[in-house]
Length: 414
View 1 (cartoon, helix red, strand yellow):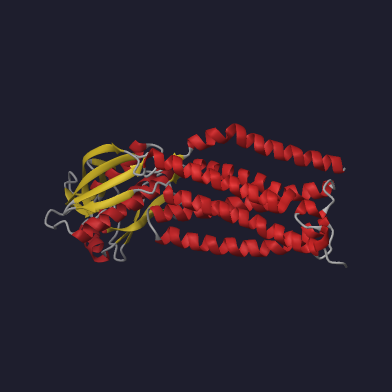
View 2: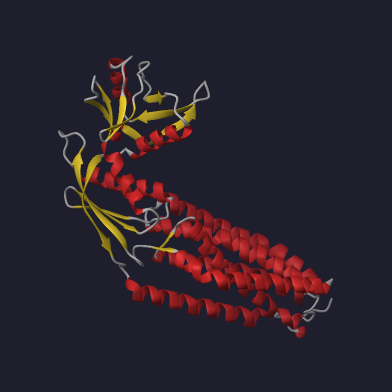
């Protein structure tokens, strides 16, 4: 039986290292690099008021920039880390790393700028603008007939009440630029600021309309003046230096673990290599963008993964010094260290989630990658590492405590 377990251990290690070796280069090349590391594209918008009678103010310009950032994060899943800066009296500059479908992002930025609700025989009268609706105020629900419908909330309930009173029994069409999306009929006077749009939509159609309304809450109309490609702000040399430094640090950590923890150190090295590979794979699956703050979070996550192994191995060494067998020490050390590891990781995840939901741009990117790093490390450096350790100990090949970093003279007599 011990030979079967030892064979299983060797097989799992070889398969893990083999997968990393043969796919590592592909996984690395598929990773999206951010604007600071690889470059991207830049768009300059000129802002003008939706209502010609109102001026463009600094406040409306800042709110529009904030809305653009939310819009990009919505279409990219919050992993693009855009740079959006108001300029002068009426301009906004958007810088975004090359990620996914560039045209799709540009379309999402542009489309909601001219969202209007119109009435009249030829729908020539604009009753509501996209900015009249609450941010994220549109959502899909199912009506009494179990048909998809859209519920929308406006900022000014009195304004909607006056419009619906005036147009009761008439059409109030939703236009995107000059294209009509839908033209529902006002069925009743709405006084609570929440309207329902029905019309036999499919779920996809209802969701598209709701998303368009949500994305339309821009205080200003944007006109694209020009766009161009931009180079990496840190340059290729800085990227190579960062990768080189990270490689040296990783090798130093692996050597440290092997010297101080012997056999467990080898298992930790395999787990760390698997951790780095799996984390990059998760980035690719999420289409995430890796920026300099993201690299910092990446390295911090690796450090916490190593720390999880050190806590476990030190606890095992303490149990061995108390006179327990290797298997008993492994079970007790793993059990007693798990709570400490969970406490440390959970508190860091909470801090990361707060940063993600409160912060913007690079702060969100740092927080997202940090949380992902911790979750991946729980898989590789807690579950996977302990699985390998259990296989190896049950194989009963390494019977001496010195293989686990404990000299015989350090063991207390029972």
